[in-house]
Each structure stands twice: as C-alpha cells, then as structure tokens.
Length: 208
Image (tube, helix red, strand yellow):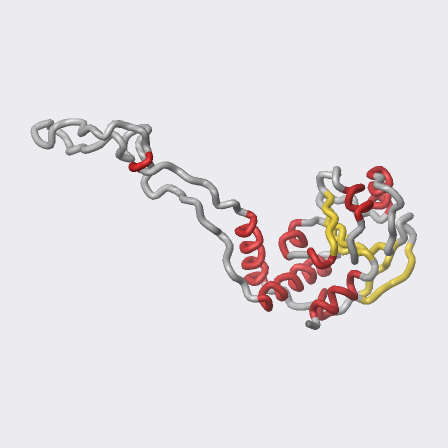
C-alpha cells in the first residue's frame, strides 16, 4: 500500500510503501476482541464492594417468634429481602486482569492497523519537532494534514515532551510513542497519524 507523506504545512513530501505484513493482513476480529477486552479489564480498579449480612449495622435480635406469626420465618433484619439489609452475592474487591498470549496481542495489533489502512484512515506526516509547547501550532499542523477528525491518534517514533504538552489540552487528540501503541487506541481512533519512520519500527516489531 502506497501513502503520501505530508509536510507539516500540508504539502506532499514523498510517497512511501507500507508493508503488507503490517498493514495488509486479513484482520482477525476475535483477536481484536480479546486484546481490547484485556486492555479494558486491566484498567479496572476492582475496588467496588457492597456490604453482606455480616457487615450491615443492624440489630441481631430475632424479629418475631418462629411459629404462629402467620407468615414466613425471619431471623434477622439484616436479610437481603429487607430495605437496608445486606446484599446477596454482591461484588467484592478483585483483580479483573487475565493473561493473553503475545502472539494473539501481536495479531490483534496488526489486524487493527490493517483495518485502518483498508478504511484509508492512516495519514503520514514528516518527522518534526517543536521548540516549545504550542497548542495552537499543533492544531494548525492537524488542520494542514487534514487530520482534524473526531478522534485522532498521533504516533511518534520517539517521545517528545513538547509535542505531548502541545496536545494535552485537546479532547479528541492522543499522542503516544510507537512502543505504546495498542489495539484499543487504534480501533478507538477515527484517524491514525503516523510520523515518518513509525512504519519501519512497526515492521521491525512484527518481525520479532
């Protein structure tokens, strides 16, 4: 697949050919599902908790006599059938994370990249740097390369504090380094902006 690499002013610089082993595979939907599921599970704190019968602050006195009351037998106001009683089978603190094989995660990431390439949602921009954090200047770059979509994922070959700080206040823009790229962020983005050189690093990662 051939894509144009744009300068930050919006003019075309050159053309590059994306490797089909990274951007042209047959996507595996189930691998994407598993990787996204693991990513979201890892983000869960797992600290939610409800009180059970033994933890509710109520009297332990029996509510009525065992027989002759004309109704069902009740031994405690802490029962879950009463308002304010303990909850039955409520959530407890737990770890939601689970293991996923590296090959499955790799397949999912390549599948997500291939989907973006298939949808023509990848934009290439030249490698650039910023002398200081300038949000207005960064917005201008996005407008110039026509990447101002609903959600933009901007991928850099290496970390840049000035570019990161320039984009931090933009609600629908996320800037990450190539080694932080994951399936969830790719699929969640409308436009994927790759800085020139990222495609080579992705190819090197896929060959490991």
